[in-house]
Length: 427
Image (cartoon, rainbow, N blue to C red; front, side, top):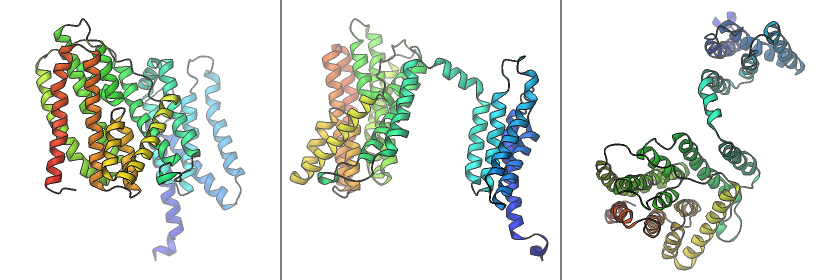
């Protein structure tokens, strides 16, 4: 009986119009808060419904020109009310005009079976409208170097990556251009996030923030930077540097865990106890070091390189591909022992390369879970030892002595947990 009075297709149409109405009201709710704007809840809701209606009619009569004409008509009707005030106010309402045109497009999108996408875009649009002041503050604080970093990362992600072939080449299937560059984008993205955050942190935000952000950018660079700054510094300030370096090492473990869980969730479940062991013992030493200075000290912000520079990205890509080939070759001629040698060698330079290459080899079925976990752990330990060597050779003796305990604790946690996991046959 219900079908006679309210057919199925009409119920579908009604649901689409309700969805577009919701989208319009959601965006219009934010615009209603600004008295200067000439569009609020009702206008945005009606524009969204109008977009769905025109899209429906355009679909029915099979012509795109009606949809285009509706967009032009909507734009004209929106712009017209602002004409008499354009010369009297600083902001002629271009943001609201743009938002209304987007609202029309979202209404049309709803009709073409993309309701979820329309809802997500509506949320993003509302966020951009609401956080106007915060976004302006961010843009004003960005330096030219920061903007270049962001643009270069965009080039890495949205120009170079899509055009690369996703196919294995060369011996051992080690060279997959898309996969290699995807790792470059992943590492550059994580590092860029820390780099930008470190840029906004300033020079007096405390040892905790510097350690966390320094670990996100590069724990090796952080260790080297603060080691160089210890010349002629007081023992109290050296304690600050020790805490920053140790915390950066701990954050690098968390950073590695996040990378692994994205790339290979299956391996993450085996690797996380190992990293957790090093993290726990390292945290104990960190708390001890923190207790040595309860008041926050002034520390210089590390002068890190732009992590999204093309040369930096290409260098990592070459390193990753080289480690992948070296690991595959050594594993082929010497079994797991060859892979472990490659892990130690590459870990001296950067943990990410051996970690990602090991995960790739496991994905290709060339190494087992236990070999993957051991290879990554050896790379982490080699990197920790290498960083302490940098501190010993470039910093003062006091810094090297106080950093040794932290390095030893993290290494002991990694090795101890790995041995226990092997003994209990966790793998």
